[in-house]
Length: 177
Ligand SMILES: Cc1cc2nc3c(=O)[nH]c(=O)nc-3n(C[C@H](O)[C@H](O)[C@H](O)COP(=O)(O)O)c2cc1C
Image (cartoon, rainbow, N blue to C red):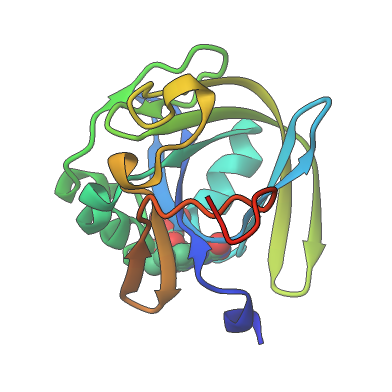
């Protein structure tokens, strides 16, 4: 069934601490849960190394990858444990309000502190209050996403992904544009 909700955007979840243990996994199951305060949720299987690190440090960063980062997304989503970072071409940098690092190459990094967690079936929903967020202004000119310029990434199935074009359809204007 869940594939009927696809394509879904794919994100990278950073967990842990620079210089100690740090990890990155791919995640489709990320959602906004509240506007004020800003709260997001991510469903993580207890089998993931990431699960252990989010439990341990109570923080995570949701990084927004571009289509140019697809190889790294794939490594993050198919290999388990921090040793995969050695194969990835990403740069971890200090975040602004959490000790979990951000990804320099990402289009945006959303820094979260865990405020709740709950198990649903075979995943844990980690609920995080957004304490800070940074973004590449070229990907979000005037604060709005520029789909094709940014190369936002969405997942179709297994190893198949799609990206977006700037064919904006405006619901307030009949027939689009
Ligand atoms: C595109 C993509 C999306 C994924 N989404 C999720 C997800 O939302 N939740 C989850 O628990 N695992 C998800 N996975 C699987 C994890 O990324 C994968 O098991 C990864 O190896 C876990 O890494 P870790 O054990 O180092 O934390 C996804 C994998 C891919 C390729």
